[in-house]
Image 1 (tube, rainbow, N blue to C red):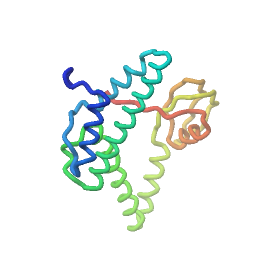
Image 2: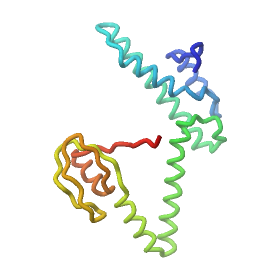
Image 3: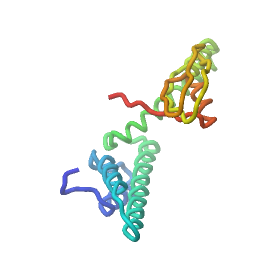
Length: 185
């Protein structure tokens, strides 16, 4: 957004209101979410006391609610109306791509079941169990035997490793580690 068009609570409210009032997905500035993110980040980084701190918190809460409502509304329109997605922002398309992948995976599994392709199902399950997931350790973990029959560890708190999905999920459920996301640059 240009400096003249800087985002604030009032302008974001207007965008959300316009989105609610129309059945089609509205064209909005492609940098909207980035601008809101920067605004919230700047607000959160500022130190205030007393009433100013309460005002800052309320402002961040309003921006959060408005942005969440906008994203939810636009995604619901895209899913329910199955409309032209050209007005969607890249962040919204990123979310919808995962839904399309989920539908494709469901169809592959259903097809494997209904067409008697047990070997395909076994292969998919094994690949999923051994798919590597990045985690950050929250506590010490001794060496473990991975779902892929490899040895992993030992690990100390704050260590980062990639582990087979099944092992990573087990550690995450025990609060021994948390999943982290690597972004490809």
